Image (tube, rainbow, N blue to C red; front, top):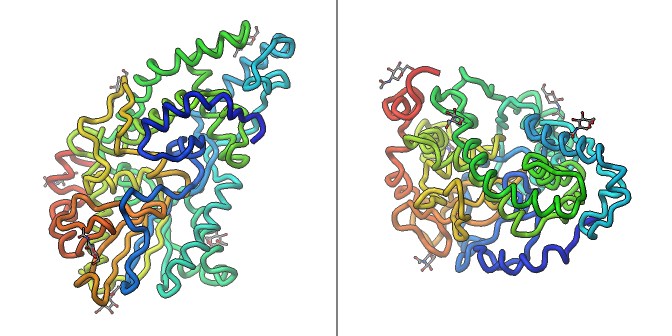
Length: 436
Ligand SMILES: *[C@@H]1O[C@H](CO)[C@@H](O)[C@H](O)[C@H]1NC(C)=O
Ligand SMILES: *[C@@H]1O[C@H](CO)[C@@H](O)[C@H](O)[C@H]1NC(C)=O
Ligand SMILES: *[C@@H]1O[C@H](CO)[C@@H](O)[C@H](O)[C@H]1NC(C)=O
Ligand SMILES: *[C@@H]1O[C@H](CO)[C@@H](O)[C@H](O)[C@H]1NC(C)=O
Ligand SMILES: *[C@@H]1O[C@H](CO)[C@@H](O)[C@H](O)[C@H]1NC(C)=O
Ligand SMILES: *[C@@H]1O[C@H](CO)[C@@H](O)[C@H](O)[C@H]1NC(C)=O
């Protein structure tokens, strides 16, 4: 908690909690969007987290996001820019009278972050999730693991496997571990956007640039009034917000002095930026229903496996991918959809459904369960458990409101058109264009 000033957060925390869907006290680690350390999502009011006692989970598909990582190269640049600027003003900062929340700047702020790779807390998250999963479904056996072939995803799958299988993993590794390329010539339900010709990260990134012109300058003005002569730019402030998230990702949650430098309202504006990025590049913000078309590849796999359409379905699938994988699946199913779409110049819709912090923190777990019951439900049912909380399948007809579940047959009927979409068919080409 070094450098974290609770008092600095207090006044705005009240405003933020009134506007938030959750009535929990403001905890910065639950407002860092897809850069948040793993935490269990809140169970929606009125819903039961556990299934009735007479039910048995018979089949599971897990899409597990990689754990905490260092910043991307593009994000690291704004942190190193900030560090350089503060370094240029170190003499003045040592002498300045600084408020408690910024007093850490007197000693200088150094950053030793790497880029892209899994961090120590990331390794811990995946090991823990392997253990957690083994305890949750002791009766189901995995025969393979499938990971997107990116270093942090591969390493995540390995730590998960250590937690799940223990030392036996060393021998199983050779036969069980499968990878799929993450590139523009490999059709994959883990990274479908890579084979969509018209997909562009800038659909999300441009939205964050627009929102940045609204929320970053006022923060720069506030901090500059407290830091004589430093003249932080909007990009420097962006770097300081990233430093808050990534110091935690690298060194452990709440280890950044920067988190305490911001008010709860300022952190909520950063959280909204991350929502805009993910919704814009991997969700409802994409044009021509592209987000749903991309996520449809996973929905097709889900239906194929849960209906055993090809006769070779396994009881347990352990698969490793990205925040983007999960967000595209939610979009394909029409879940957490905001109407109208999220405004890129604000104001922040306080009751928005799209919540990156709850959907895809580091090490997010999207768990699909197929279950049957002795008496409470008739026939096979399906449920989505996202980060340990049931996510109601609101777009499935006859959903049960307590469990958020529905009959597998209703799920298949409700999403038949989506499940049918495949790379290069008419629906795909209409969104993505032809070719890779
Ligand atoms: C730091 O100061 C040097 C020398 O005045 C200058 O060239 C450089 O642009 C400054 N860097 C930043 C990030 O302000
Ligand atoms: C598993 O196999 C992969 C690929 O052969 C290898 O890189 C890795 O070190 C092995 N060990 C573990 C513990 O995953
Ligand atoms: C993003 O913004 C740039 C600069 O305004 C523009 O040229 C580009 O077309 C935009 N891209 C998308 C996908 O909106
Ligand atoms: C799928 O069907 C095959 C052939 O009937 C069966 O052996 C297998 O156990 C089924 N898989 C699941 C997950 O029910
Ligand atoms: C949901 O299912 C449970 C168990 O069968 C049942 O008791 C309950 O009435 C159902 N709730 C709704 C809203 O359908
Ligand atoms: C979609 O585009 C591919 C080329 O990428 C083409 O082979 C295919 O026939 C197209 N599909 C339809 C339904 O037109």
